[in-house]
Image (cartoon, rainbow over all chains, first blue to last red; front, side):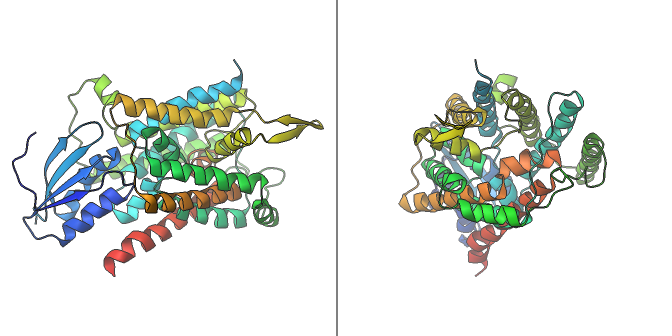
Length: 83
Length: 353
């Protein structure tokens, strides 16, 4: 899925170990304003599945999950998009 | 083919299942307080219950003999807590760092080196006296045997094992019914894609790991080892071979050769590598020197803790709890306490401060 949304901020957690991809994403989103878009670049398979699962509980909205190449993924998340 | 090579085969299966099932016990324990996510904890529970039923059946069939962990409460408390702290620092438990070596995670490789190093020093090096002191002075037996939930009440093992499995499954079904969990959208992908390309669901992952452990107990009994899956002692075995360690058998010093549990480790790395390559998830991931230092330090704590406590997360939680050993119950609780303490200090407190 090609996304045309522009991200307000980019978080690159490639190479980071568990649970930093998740924690960094959540803490960054917490500090962002409602409606701002966070782009997360990650290569940790477990977190690619776990972050979307936990976003909802925090009130953030997953806009898209793009598979780049190999284990590299990009998530686009609207901060506080469900509040 | 020697029976020890079965370990390699089981390891490949286990490594594959760990990688596909995202079966990370560090996350399972930590996420319950950190992310309020119980998915992996449910996978671990399914693995324990599957093994509990399977081990009991194998013993009834006369194919294995239960070998519950010894109970030395002081060693479990100190070792288990240090292990729990270490695994949060290392970003993975003993099985987690082992399978991530096969995924190309450099931080996990540093943790594995730390684990193997400290574990070896605790088995036959300068840390051994601390372990021996704790184990000897706090050991409690049930008559001649290591205490279990069955023998302390004078009950047959299988009665208690099946009672726990049945109660847990019924309770699980009732809770699931009450929660009316949003049934995960049924995947339309083919079975092949789901096995080889996607992460597995928690129930499938848990049951597969439990079944592998049943097979592990049986084949390791054939190899004269008589214990289900375990990680840390296998790493020690690899260190022994690399350092040319000699052991005295019947008064003669002989070079140590790889056993079932050591082949298991090699198999796990291979299995995870195969699984990661098939799903195109293999990549050398460099996390920076600071993280390398942290995971190495975590590995050191895990190695000392696992040997002192008589088991890591796999030896005590996955393999020991299904055997109902009191030592494994105390060992497991200690790991959870250490992990929660460290997760709180590292992740929860900095956020609220």
